[in-house]
Image 1 (cartoon, helix red, strand yellow):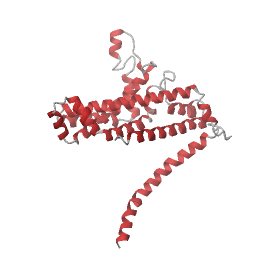
Image 2: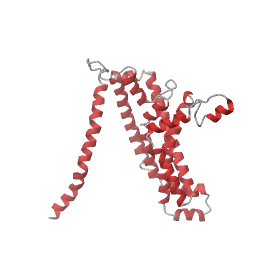
Image 3: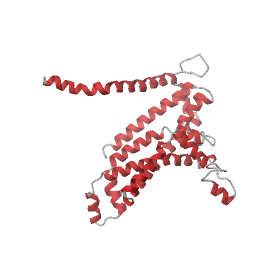
Image 4: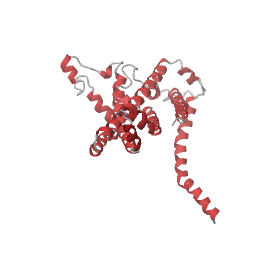
Amino acid sequence: MKTTRSNNKTRLPVVFIGPGLLVLAVLALVPTIFAIVISLQDRELGQTDIGWVWFSNYVQLFSDRRFLNSVSVSLIWEVLTVTSTMAVAVLLGVLLFQNTTPRWRNALCMLFIVPVLLPRVSAAFVWKFAFHPLFGLLTYPYKAITGEPLDLLANPLTALLTVAFVDVWQWGLFFAVIVLKLLETLPPQPFEAARMDHAKTWEIYTYVALPMLKAPLISLTFVKMVESLRAFDLIYVMTRGGPGISTETLDMYAFSQGFIESGRISYASSMAVLMMVASTVAFTYIWKWTRPSS
């Protein structure tokens, strides 16, 4: 009887979790395998003749300057948005924890959650109009003072920074709420001991509070890294990869090659597969590098 009950207990998680995991595995593996197969072919939109070119598409990628530019833009976007979001989240979370009452914290948390609840496309349109060179709420003061329009989205030097600002606005405020709630869960004794040793406020948070939150902060960083890879809609609505190709990320270039410009489905699939492999390897390496220290 005891062995039967123990076997039932061990099988119970499999019964409940198994079907969901099976569905997720099918939804993930089938498109991935299909994309890999297509990337080894020369399939194009509107054509029925399909041949196997094997790794020719992958070889061609590394001689494609536009592909190399999109990889560079994607890396800059990833580093810029992740580091800025985490910096804003930690700074605002500490300021809220240190300088606000519980009632004000709750009110500000409600406000900070609103941006991430907005659909990404809606937020992109709102901010695109706010940065309009003639009628934008944020650029009109510059035009009123100088008499010249300020088009941040048309300047290759500021376009990516402007779009990154919108991304940080959406996720940095939301992560600040998470950091605040994490700080509220910490025991007060280490803070009191640090104050008794005459530690300054920035020293308390730098050497006491944040090290205690190292593991959840690393997890938040990984969440943001994954989310930053999905910024196609935000960048496409605000700049469409322009001016020129200064804000064209890898997923935008793959979409353009596959469905907008030339209809080269296989060539676009090879980019997607390469991006998937590179992301998996990079995230695995970073996870193994940060896990022992956490």
